[in-house]
Image (cartoon, rainbow, N blue to C red; front, side, top):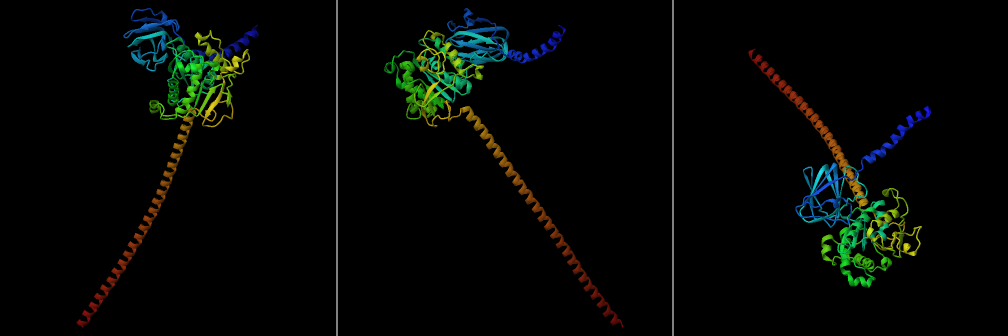
Amino acid sequence: MRKLFNVCKFVLPLVLLLCMPSLTVKASEAHSLNLNVSISNGSGSGNLLDGSYNSVTKVSAGDSVTISSDEGIKGLYIAWNRIPNPWTLEANGESLNCGENGFLHEYVKLTNTANEIKMNFTSESTICYITAYSEGDLPKDVQVWQPPCERADILAFSSHADDEILFLGGVLATYSAEYNADVQLAYMAEFWTTTPIREHEKLDGIWHCGVTHYPVCGDFPDVYCSNLEDAKTKYSADEMTAFAAKCMRRFKPQVTVTHDFDGEYGHGFHRLTAESVKNALELAKDDSFDAESASLYGTWDVPKAYFHLYSENQIKLDLRHPVDAFGGKTAFEIVDEAYKKHVSQQWCDFKVADSFDPNADRTLHSDYDCGLFGLYRTNVGADTAGNDMMENLKTYAVQEEEERIALEEEEKKKAEEEAKIKAQQEEQKAIEEEEQKKEEEKKSASNIITIVLIAVLALVILGAVAIVVMTSVRRSRRRRHRRKR
């Protein structure tokens, strides 16, 4: 027993020491806070804390919502019922402008923690729920959206919310999280006029796949179309093509990807989306098409375009290996989880699938493979190395890094050249100064010699004059002496 005690004396501290890193990590994680909420108009605030998209709290212009917590509030997460108008958040005597990006799910980070904050409204707004968080790293499901891409590595066109998961999910998960590429979603159909909750579900789904740039959406309502001809009677094919071309010009993608030309299971709107994207690929580079978007964004020639299930030049994304960014889960598992975020659509007979699905019990699954695409168009060469949509391309981030390094090298080289030239100039100057010094010394020596020679000559002349004078004096004396005699 004593031996066991002695062993424990050494082992337990070691175990605690090994556990300390994990304790440190947990200590840095933010957590949701218990809140007290009041609305200035006197209405009930219970729905604001229920975490549901199905409940709505309405506020009017001039109203405010006061939120307090015994723990310090570092950030506020708002799930709006409709796209918000600008509003302000007061905290610690500071006023923050919010809502300017028009994010349906908005996170506001405070400069410093506060025990009480206030939401002020200048126009009518509707909120589903709010959550406040402490200081620390936010949970992964808190959506902190970036604005839509300035330049997208991949631009994915989806007909409806949930199509981007079922048919394009392999692309979203693979390139957003694993390859850290900038992926931009563009939806054709909006659901505000039909099933608004799907606007929430699409954000939840793509965020789960690793997409962080807020999606854009056309203004085409959700209407079922049995085939392509039916779709063309319910939608303007020209307007859909113009929307697709505008997105291409705006986001300047290196790759576009969209639906199967046959509409996966024949859906007419899917087929019209594919046709619109195909036509836009040619028109987006023509400045005579849609002059307004051409003037606003310029033209764009998309380097590569893939279509779901396209039979030529096919690639198959491997969605079955663990991905570090997903905590070791596979892209397939993440996409499958993302589809479950579309709660309103779980009654449908659809399931995320790929060609490697071990549980596939019908052809339907492999037909809808969310990792199978064909290269329809390329101006950077064919795919030869492997199943990678970015083959023959580099992400914009990599390009920018290479440009930065190249610029640094160029500046370094320029500085070295300038330093070399300066050193050569200084060396030449030193040589010239040395030569000038020697020349001056030479001149000085020559001047000294000249002066000496002049002096000697002067002495000689003086001596000669003296001799002449002395000789003359002597002669004069002799003459006088002779006369006296």
